[in-house]
Image (tube, rainbow, N blue to C red; front, side, top):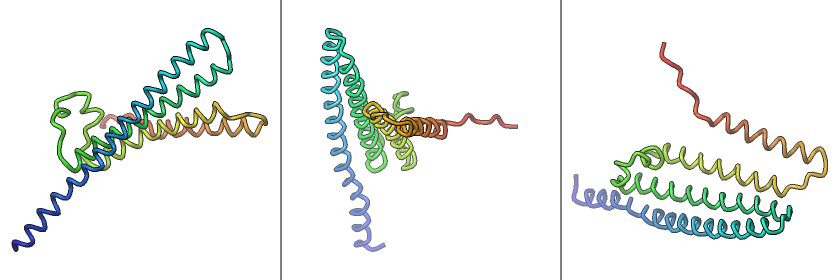
Length: 173
C-alpha cells in the first residue's frame, strides 16, 4: 500500500469525528427542549393553582392541552438525547460510563443503525400519539362525521400500538 493511500485512509477514517458536530448540536437541542418543557410545566402549575381557586372548566381544558404540550417537549428532548448518544456510539466510540450501568444497557447503548432507528422510532411514535391527543382536545365535534373521524384516529392508534408491541417468543418445540 502506498504512502499516499495510507494517508488518505487515515484522513477518511478520522473524518468520522465530523459526527461530533451532530452530537454537540443535538445535545444542545435536547437541553433546550428539556428547559422549554420545564418552563411549560411550571406554567401548568400556575394554571392548576388558578383552576383550584376558580373551578373554571375552560381553564381545565387549557391545563390538559398544556400538559400534552410539555410532554411533547420532553419526548422530543428524549429523541434528541437518544440520537446524541446513538451517533456518538456509532461514529466516535463507546460511552464507558454507560457500559457498566444496567439502565443504560436497556435504554441507551446503541450497537448499530437498526438499534438507533428502533429506539428513535418508538419515541417518535409516542410524540405522534401525544400530538393526536392535543389535536383531539382542540377538535370541535359538530357532526357525526367529525366524531367518526376522531374515533377512527383513536382506533388507528390502538391498532398501531398493537402492531408495534413486542411479540412474546414462542417456546422451542
